[in-house]
Image (cartoon, rainbow, N blue to C red; front, side):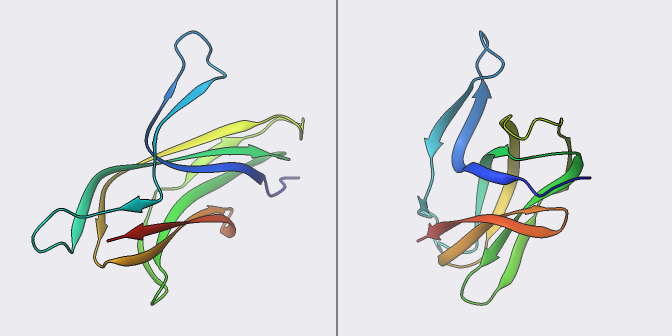
Length: 132
């Protein structure tokens, strides 16, 4: 029976890449917690790409995960990724990577956003993202 994973790490970043010499190692590039629009007017603003890397554990069975971006002030869902299927083994101690590349992220307002990981339609983890 599938169980909800535990998120060891949820990292917002510019990019991630699998190490060419070790496929179990992932390099994270450009950690993100704050973004600043340099456009005039500043909003709405489109970021070419936002990456989210998850390291999950305590997983069994199969499931689907997606990333949702919510504007904290109103609760409005700004964007949602397509659901990704993931198949876990039976070892709950194994750490499983689940990466997302989100392209053309449109942020309509300045302020605080919540980047959320949903698994089988349940909110599992979230990280703040401030836009100025």
